[in-house]
Structure formats: C-alpha cells, structure tokens
Length: 247
Ligand code: ADP
Ligand code: MG
Image 1 (cartoon, rainbow, N blue to C red):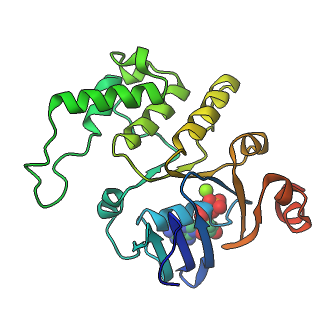
Image 2: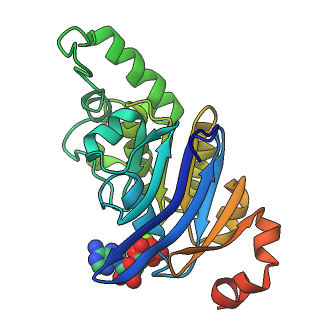
C-alpha cells in the first residue's frame, strides 16, 4: 500500500529481541478523530508497539506511516516534530516548577530550518498555555507548584505538556493507573475531548474505562492482533475471552 487516508498506518510491523518476536507482522490503521484502545494480556506487545511508533525501539521489519509519511528509521525527536506525542506510565513533570512553567517549557521553539525566526513571543506562549490549561482542567492551578497536585492532576499536566506540541497523534500507556474514581471519570472526558481532530491510542486494562472511551478496541496477543472491533464485538469474541477476558 502506498497511500492512505489513515492518520496512522502500521503494516507488517515486526520487532525481534534476540529472536523473540515481540511484535509479529502486525497491521493496524487508526483514523483521525478516533480514540482507539489497545487491550491484551501482559507481554502481548502493547507497550512495545508504542515504543516502535514513537521511535524508542527500532523495527526489524514493516512500515509505520503517519499521515502518509514513513516514520521507521527516524530519530525520536523527528517523530515528535512530525506530530506524534507519547505519554509514558511514570509522569515526567518538573515537580518544583509551577503548572504554568511546566506547560511553557513544553512549548516547541525554533522548529525547522528558520529556527531563530520561528521563535514564538511570550504572548503566544501564554495564550497556548491558557488554552491547554483549560483543556486539561488546570486553569485554576496555573500558579501552583506541580509537586502540590494530586496524582490525577499530575497525569493531566503531563498530557498538557504533550498538547503544547500540538500533536496529531497522542499515545498513552495505562493513563488511569492509581487514579481515584472521580479522576478516572474526568480523564475519560479529557481523552474523548482531545481525540477530536486528532487520533488517540490508549493502552488500558480497566474494562469499564475501555467501554467508556473506546471508539474501537484492538486486542493484542503474542505480538499479533487477535481481534478488533467495537467493545461489544471483542467482549463476545470467544478467542478474546479465552486468552484475556476469561481470566
Ligand atoms: P505488554 O505491554 O503488552 O505487557 P510488552 O510490550 O511490554 O508487553 O512486552 C512484550 C514482550 O516483549 C514481553 O515478552 C517482553 O518481555 C518483551 N520485551 C519488551 N521489550 C523488550 C526488550 N527491550 N528486550 C527484550 N525483550 C523485550
Ligand atoms: Mg505494557
């Protein structure tokens, strides 16, 4: 396949670690405006898939196209610049800086060949910080030190730091781990909101949360896709019940 309307087109992707295929000829397409959830047993290769898409791990074979541009082989910073943001399980915020400062330092500066000319003014940075803070529900907390935030708020701040870069594809690995019930509900709303105009991929185990947010669910098993479809389709799929949901 040469051209695609998909935001993300992963085809025949493979990665071997000492002969063990953690990802095995995997093909996956994600649309714009889509919130895709990836589920599957531990060791299925979910995190490795995100590592490959964001360039942290090099593929052994296959292709990763983002808005029709091949990403395999690009260094991580170029993949970020292309518009792919990745949230890891442990938040990497600056605890001793304020929420405002955390967001402001995440503003991309000096992109492209005209780096110096692309430098943004303080007013532009402040405007973007204000927009992003509203999106992540931290408008009232801009002057607070990040260390003072709740666990959930820290996760949202990190999502905000990614949003400062205006990614078209956002990938999150188990974003609600350790959150309160209320924070989970707010995170569901946040993820649904930020998937508009973008594509969002979430790895998650909590099936109630998956049902709440997913447009489509992909079930991985042994580096391959076992099933894909609506929550109802995958939940009633005997193969999915056998390897994952039945346990
Ligand atoms: P999941 O996120 O679905 O639980 P992972 O992607 O973390 O699964 O891991 C898939 C498999 O690949 C596991 O068997 C894991 O041990 C292996 N694996 C992941 N990363 C590496 C690595 N860098 N080197 C060797 N094996 C790895
Ligand atoms: Mg994982």
